Length: 297
Image (cartoon, rainbow, N blue to C red; front, side, top):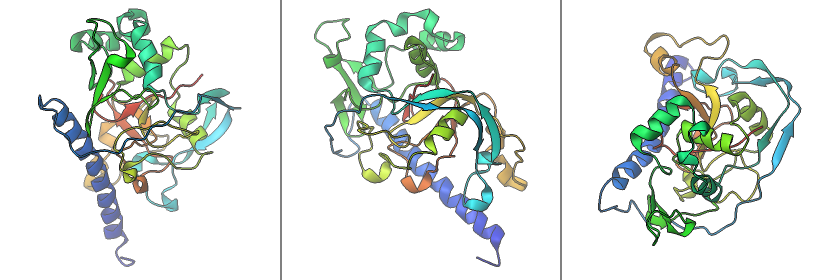
């Protein structure tokens, strides 16, 4: 490989691209099984009973920070480059993702029926698609119309289960994440804030390697794993970004329009595939990926 660096680079890119497909296969299987009336089980999943750590607020002084990747330091996708400086106002960021129990409070408070919480496009999408809860959630409460916590169940790769109030909420769109943050009097972090904060913490969490294939209660401060976290940042090129030559230039650059950035990886992401600077991106209404929420202020 030393005498063919171009071939080695393409091979490494291909391996990382295959890891992306492995994650997407899991999310696609989950989506197709969930809409099957028989609700088939992909495989039996271990269940981990644990309580989420209290949400704490980590303060950062702001100022000039460096984000992004230097391609000389190891593999990264082209959209993670170049490393560059940003200016951050002082901010605080949550120590963990929002839980199902916390999101249930939003549902029960009428969050899906409160127009002023929603972006205009989000409200239109909410009404057109008749959203009342995250994707794969069903209310099976005894009292028709009541959204009691004990009545909620959701589909997992291990079949239908009662909603775990301590696990991170997932399968929510950017619109839902933004509305929830506004309801809490908070906001979503920018991707620069997220990366600046996450760089101070080890890359550990519930990834696909753990075999849970479902978000689990975050018992410590963590920025990675369990759920991809929506940011307030549009998916745009970094200053000085250049697409790769030839056909490889289509890999990321052509998607830099109309999408939002997510960070952190999920319970379906291989841990070896992750790094703090990794930029994922989806359209604002998308929900089928393991997408969750982290708050900032």
